[in-house]
Image 1: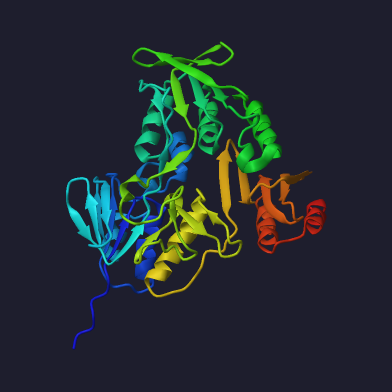
Image 2: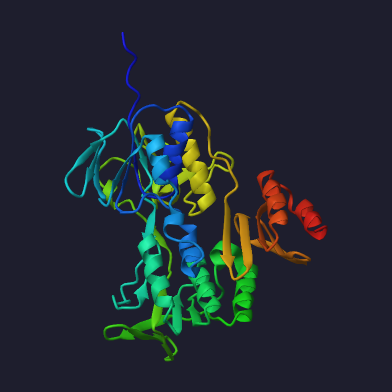
Length: 398
């Protein structure tokens, strides 16, 4: 009697999660069919370079690809590119594509990521951009070559990284942010001040507590009107006001969605044999018990590896301290954990370090600027639930 066929795995998405799940499945011995479905025409690619190296021209689009042609053949995976998933029928175990084709699966991984949030008040003009996909980055890079004035709406990571690249090309840059400081919700006020100062040192202007009320231009963008009545001229505009998880196509599928696909600590969703990972998902962290959607590269990588483990019979759980980095100018900003209501900053020989604590006097996050060694040590302290007093002693010794 022949052995049962290995289950087929379909991954919907074209980024880090898709490439990692496919690669890990083969490493772990999965012999069944593996198919990646993506609405993009490119094979799975890495997204961090889109707002950094690709814009700066230090890497090519092909160098962002996570699966090279030879590896795709070696792994024996199938790519269905350039067609979006339009629906999911879990009873029939089929992904319905926008062209009407139905892709059957035994196991399914949702890795559709997120898309740039749009502002209804911003018209579709030449020179107006959002940045989420490879095509967005290449279009912005082309226009940066001739741009003179860039305005960025939103002082988030992507906006600030693009601002840094533009300043390195001697483009006049103004970042407009509604909050009192950049990234206060994510990094706290101390880090927001650090970022403001760093960009000012490089000639970029960050206008906080300010709102863009109108984008002006006929065929192309010509400027933005601020709430105080000032008109900022611009021939390039980037809107960077956050991201929205791509979950609409799951309507009626039975997959639970609440600001992302809800998952347990192994990546399993509310529907058997359906998993999710990366920006589209909200996982339960086995260490903290919190249900979180973490839009970070490292977490997406870890979650993809855990899903591949689950698909091959493993029982690993996600319990990591979230980690994020941002390259701006010649400085690497790194954060582990999260900002808390309590903070303390110290200027070390290698750069500033900021501690974050919670109301229970525990260390919950560490931010470093140009100090990766301190970040690595801090991540271990956060994972251990270090008391605030001990964390302060560690900070004093840096």
